Amino acid sequence: MPIIQVHMIEGRTLDQKRELVANMTDAVVKSLAVKVDDVRIIIQEMTKQDYAVAGVLTADKKA
Image (spheres, one colour):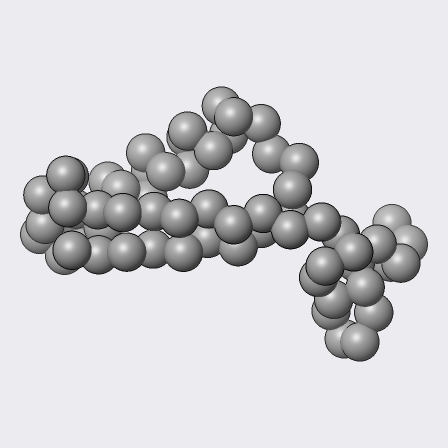
């Protein structure tokens, strides 16, 4: 049973998450030859205050 963890900055819509998990599930089923019902996906969202790149919080980065 494949278990996939997705970590991302919060702010995606429910429809975007639905599309993501559907596409990921399809890819796993095709790649690993498993049943759709065996695929598990965990989405963990974090705030920009909880993620950093190159020593700088994403919340502090300028666009």
